[in-house]
Length: 464
Image (cartoon, rainbow, N blue to C red; front, side, top):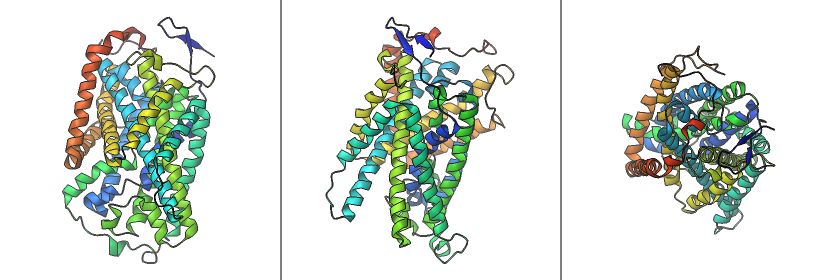
């Protein structure tokens, strides 16, 4: 196995194993996101009604399709752990790279905390059915994060193979539910004609719904974090990412169609577990049990993928000295960034223990949104610095620069939507990243060796 010098006199570091294929990439991307089809997306209904939710589903679906196309091109070319952070490091510069790395770590760590909260709440709901109404959820939060951290510690192949199985089962539960409501016969089970109303809050409700519309797809960009561990980045990243976004578009549309045909928008907009509620309305005990288990599987798969992605981003920051080099270590046996994995565990648990699910989700959404905004500029500069004929690309996304422009416009609209509902959170998160940037410039940048960061064998950028 190839080795490389750490560069600080502390010996050698073993590289991560290249063991993943396109199915693992699909499992990583879809696994993180699919929990949003079981809960969270329905807050779009509360913001603007059922039709606003559908518009948000497709508009934000377009945003994430642009994200998937851009990521597929750049990551299949810049194939290294860190994903968007590594892209920023090569294409824009250190300060942008530090911020993008921090966006990734915070987005996935917050999402992991939210997933652990969901698992705890599910266990409490199940216990209440059996007569234990006062069950403490905190042990389940700790157990979930600790077990998944151990799984990630032991190896990426086993971690993402498990994700593949439980993600597929969770997705198929949505398909089974769709078939169970007899979708071709309106009025037998589904009652869209009676339940669907006009936009109750007008078009401003549609705009407000864009914020939680991200919950349908948030995290698909995490496929980039596995770029250093796939057998063929030029094949696996595009296939897994584009296949993932297509899967999620189907799942999101099924979810909306079933839920809005069974529940009035006033209830659906504030439901905690809408798809489980939908199964309960059908009066089929087996279907209820299936959706309960599928919701748990989706939350566990999401938390599992989040630990994987957050640790790779934090590892990359450590390897390049943007954070202490201590975190840039690989386990000699399991070939995983074990120090980064263990470091992020107490942080995720601490945020989960706050119990502030909406605030944790908002922090995750906004951190992701900042990363998507960067991608629109990054793609334009990437094509300008290294035109198509100058370097080999594993995938070339079509219609450039239209996807980058579309992505930027939709990001701006989503910022406005977030400001309408969580203005204080938006401003506080922006302040946090500004303070972090100042810390990097004045305290951490002195340790960064710029010449060691450019690992791609590319020609000199055009115009330089």
